Length: 323
Image (cartoon, rainbow, N blue to C red; front, side):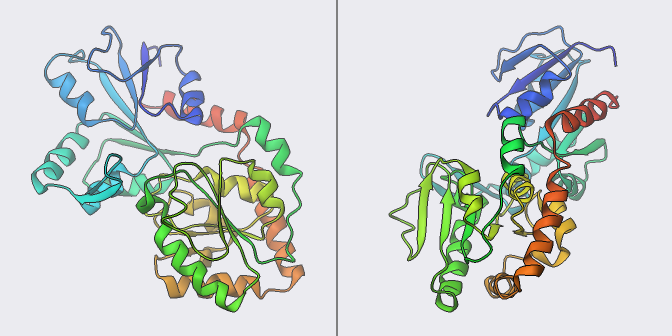
């Protein structure tokens, strides 16, 4: 591919930034005044505004628009909802807005998705243009640290990692409900929640600890399971981080990381049904130590596939294959 490429970020996620740096040095924050003169505009998540910008001449008419999908926007579009960071509430999306959004979605020239979850959603919307699947990586610094972790399978501690305040996408409410029921049968169990912007007082629950932004490796050493009951989570890097540390993961079927959890145990990718999730977690807790150690070893083997250089090379190869 001999094209001039501009990467346009919104959230500027460090993994996405590293991806972009493999294919261009031209990187800029999104605005309505983007420079012209590029053959390909590669956007982090944003697609509606770029398509409109090309239609009205704010971007070159002959330019290509590529989009990296790694957030919940496609799932929210399917559900006709949106999360307001101002009110911190979920609201309904106007049907006309949904139709316009899907129309614009089909105008994207190429889509790159972290995991099959968003790729499948694009196909549900009738998108037929280039759709590629890639996977994120564990940073070099974390990789070596996590690889050395030896989890404690003598306890019944559970770990969740994710930033707020979008409680819906992170599945906070169902997670707390499930844990409350588990805690009745396993009273010594604890749920540690790592991440910022959570209202700990609002979600105050017995034996649940909101720890803020902390070193994940410390908590993985003291947990025997990671859970991620997301609703539309684009991927969930914490799932592969936990696996590299040898901590098995149980996830919902509405997270991109389900592709990876499925390799560990296909029965640990679950529908968002509290009773089913509780049953699977308790089945795991009741396993003997040897069986847990076997899962831990398998998880580590899976996690080792997410080295930074390998995934960056895979991303570059995928991107350059697009037309």
